[in-house]
Length: 318
Ligand code: AMP
Ligand code: MG
Image (cartoon, rainbow, N blue to C red):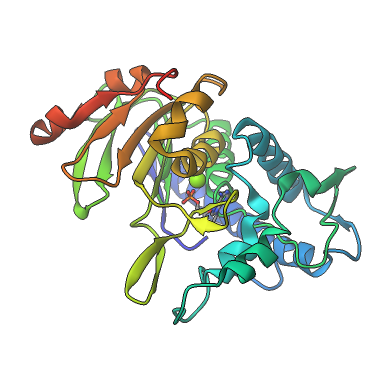
């Protein structure tokens, strides 16, 4: 899945830790075989090959993730849309070489025709992408899903205190050896070597961050973020990073992508309708502002020099 996975265990004995680590890495490898965009033999790649041709019987994880993606597509009013894949590809994300030029308006419109999660036909564990050219990209949800499955494995193995981190998609259980609650640093989107503050995570909770610094392409020496607004076909601008606190990692992952697209201006509206999630948004402006919903305001401890920039984001703010 193009990132580093770590499982930190508190009180587990070393033998138990070894067994669970092996289980979790096998689980991640299995999921990658199904959900990866980068493997030509993954289920996701087969789906694209069968677009406009045949419905494909898919394994369990693909089925579940695509159903969840549909659900989050609805909740996010289409700002989270896994069928954005052809546009992601057009902008050169996941490609091997940098693009020399921006895609043209016409090229973008051509690929946008294939973008609409509501067109994906999910029926009896088969999936059909009805038009040739359609594809799905699960990069905004698969890691969160993987973390939730790993969380279940660890709990099922009888481990109480642990933290799972898959490239910034985090979920915790119990408490660390050294304190009451797990504490997670939120990276400064303008300076990777720093954090802007820390978040206390209660047992069972999940955290995900979408940042424009994580992955981007450079075209004619300008940086474009890897998250596309499915309504326009253009990479999102105006947001530097979004962190979401939720009750499970799949929700945190998909909502971090959704709020990244919505940005500060539109976030308030969607917050009124979402299930209980809390969000921290850092707009792409200077000096740094950190906008938080009230639930996160309690859990977030900013660096002292940034505390003047902390502001409360209310559901009615739009
Ligand atoms: P994340 O880092 O979780 O925000 O996920 C970003 C990844 O999700 C990108 O690298 C793309 O693979 C994919 N993606 C980009 N834009 C969207 C979108 N609007 N909805 C869903 N997935 C997206
Ligand atoms: Mg995400």
